[in-house]
Amino acid sequence: AGRPPRPLPHAPSRPLRRPLPITASPTITASLLAYTFNQDATCLAIGTDRGYQIFTCEPWASAHSCSEGGVGVVELLHSSSLVALVGAGTRPGESTRRLVMLNTRTNTSICELNFSSSVLRVRMNASRLLVVLETRTHIFELSSMKLLHTLETAPNRLGLADMCVAVGRCHAVLPAAAPGQILFFDALQLHALSTLHARKSALAALAISPCGSRVASASEKGTTVSVHSFPQGELLHAFRRGAIPASIYHLAFSSCLPPHDGAASGAGAAAATAQAAAALLSSSAMLCAVSSSGTVHVWSLDAQRGAVGGRAVGGGGGLTGGSFSLLSPSSLLAGERAFAQAKLPPLTRAVAALRPSTSDANEMTMLVLTERGIFYSFRLDALRGGDGVLQDERRVGLVDS
Image 1: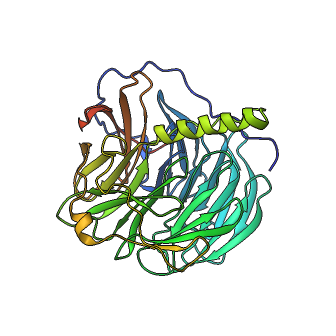
Image 2 (image 1 turned 60 degrees about the vertical axis):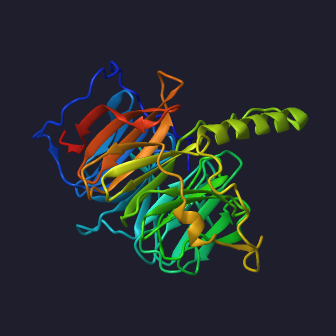
């Protein structure tokens, strides 16, 4: 794969002191086909029918752009120059079955991979690359792009899958064979750990925490969001989004810094690993959900501990490590309500990201990017919750050069 990726350039800019109004610009063209944040919510990327663009979120700046063909899937690796792209399929040569690994610093292709059907989603960490098709998920070694394993899955038209970013861990989750089931998979050792019967109906959203210890899921009904432990399958939280069904478009745990990859060995290395794991766990203690209701709900996994007491979720046969079944509906009806929230226009598809504030240890920053190309930044009180305060609002799109 050549030399290791270099960080994206950060353009100097003064911090924003007040929300910016949305203003139409004649230089911004094309609708968004793909929109995503990187693993620590410091950058975002968009794909359109004309190309793609990467932005840094704080300070806001364009880091890289290319207008040489439609992009339907885009994935970043932290703030490095490595990006994964899949064609939009709107023009000849823009195949939705071709994945291109690109170095944005040199704007050169590292490799191209072709698949039997459309690539629906891509996930990366420092060791592994997941490529999600409708009925298969391929696992590659990132450093060599060698295919390591292929999982046959039930139809997964939403391309649901996620993988943690912690160094030394490659915990992954994806839909299992039956509706509402989640497969817990070790993508480092390449074996299944367990199967969780998390929901009664088909999954609509799925996420794993950065440290790989918690898994959030929502069904097509969208009234509750469950958080289970990985890989034990214990129900830790049953969060209530609302009584009226809604489509949950996206789930995200708060981001965190990756553990320090030092040169310590023996007891020192073990202590450093334990300290890093504790830091990861504490910094991924919030979860947000974007739904068609127009409200982005935020729950604090620490402040709202214990609605279901972390009770174990049954046992029985299944994949390696056993399988688990969900708790009774009555326990979900008494779910925990949101700790904080922010409003969006109803029926707006969007992705969201949570990260610690860079200016106040008692605040969190929530970033939202909608399919309509509107970027929002909200300030959240990490101690008291409540309504998020809008800090920034701007239109995002591919800028003509």
